[in-house]
Length: 236
Image: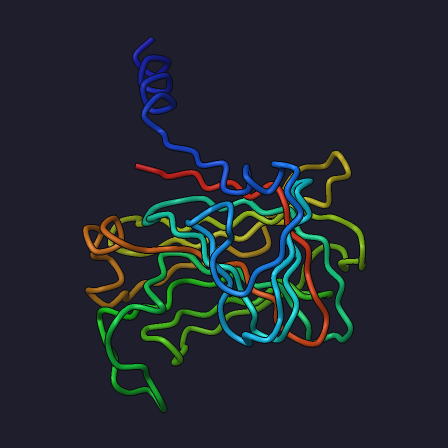
């Protein structure tokens, strides 16, 4: 009985954001900065390429390293995205980044220095045609803790898959989980299950990220991506 009550209370307290809700408002639009219909969504980097929202729930991102930022504070959280790839090479991929303050004021990093606690890039999870990879970005533009591996089935252009990234603290470490659902009735396959066992103090400063942070969905390479059904679930 106690376990049942705890589950009900935890469920009630959980916050879930339907991030892409306004993508289905019937308004077809393109933009290079803020979404005119949603001031929590902006497109950044490689600024010559417009971001397209068709009004029927789909957002298309083109241009190498072009990304959308969704301004939802996230610390311990689960991000779910339906991805439709339109890759042109084996190097193309879609990357997700959570617990990010990538664009805040401060010094960017080059060659490993300086490390600015105000500009943590976040924890990443990316998928390409054949595999996944992950990086930690201690400060904007510098990366470490590179990890990679295969995925169960190769991605196919124009065929939707569901990606799920989890970032959460566990016993002084940061647990990062990456999953793929091929939407074939077999559910999610856990492809990434890694820990940051030595996070820097600013990477686990919960108050900092609950004050201001965001996540991104990024297109990498010469192709483009379409995403929909974006959901952010805030954990305790």
